[in-house]
Image (cartoon, rainbow, N blue to C red; front, side, top):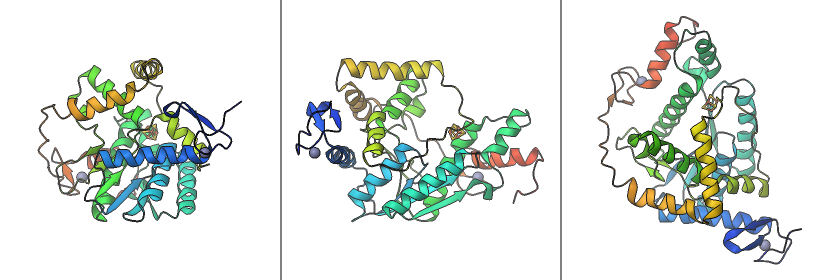
Length: 316
Ligand code: SF4
Ligand code: ZN
Ligand code: ZN
């Protein structure tokens, strides 16, 4: 039995701690949108930015991101979506379908870039990894591919920022893992806005950085968003440390309301800014010309290694 919405008095839809009461579907959506707006303004995520590319995976977070950005900012910022078709059986078809449905519904221009057009798919890389003739696990290839292709597209099309759907829980979990394992370089990148300091690397912004997993999940339900629920067949079982940390962060929040926001605020305003990590010296990849710490960038190295396995003729 739910109570009445504390704002309009209509049938309540979900309980919201901040209000110590229920909100209806409509006011719940507005509450979430106001949180995103607050994050964007406080963190200055869109200062000086006129053109934003939204990375769309088909999952819940990037779908919420696209809907909220469109509602709040399309009057002053040019927004477009980009989806990378990774070539993962079942998963990619479902993701593409959700992304297309969403972009139609909210009238967001969208581009789909196919990894296959660069000579391989994640399935092919995964098959070769399983056979032992290629040494990088699928998620490592996938992460590099997504970062590279999204940045390449944004850079070539003149976007000034790439918006990704990382939420508060993602950022706190990554930070906690980095603190435990001592990976300060990775930790230093977990800000709501990440500027890479190279003209060919487009800044990344994370407008959902104040929303929890539960909040984005509830928003997709309140707004009835098309979201792909297909699981990736290459997803490894969660690492024990990761799942324990994730449960502990939730459990502390249950006991101490506001803990996650306190943790995030100290990370972003004190801990990360005080890390003295120099920017890596970047040069241009000798194959594609994009920034790289070595002679050849990681994306081109993956392509070269796959080509050397001799499995396909179609490499350009
Ligand atoms: Fe890519 Fe791994 Fe995620 Fe699958 S689970 S989409 S391979 S990063
Ligand atoms: Zn209401
Ligand atoms: Zn390259």
